[in-house]
Length: 102
Image (cartoon, rainbow, N blue to C red; front, top):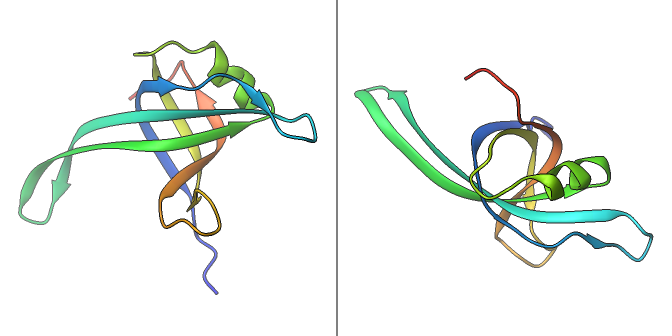
């Protein structure tokens, strides 16, 4: 089994849900990160745009809960299914930076 699953993505907060708590009392925030950039492809430059569902827990949920729509951020984490029966991907956030160099 290959265990490389690490994603770093910069973008803007496109949507943020209300802070909620798991039955164990862990804070959770779901949000959408909108990314747009110019990337080098084998045939030249290509415009890359996407919007990714993200979920932040514990300390990162508290950070995400203070962010506003449109705020620039850099997130790090891993991709996983939204639910065990779902094929929809989401980013499980391990780090959020709001003061970063692009």
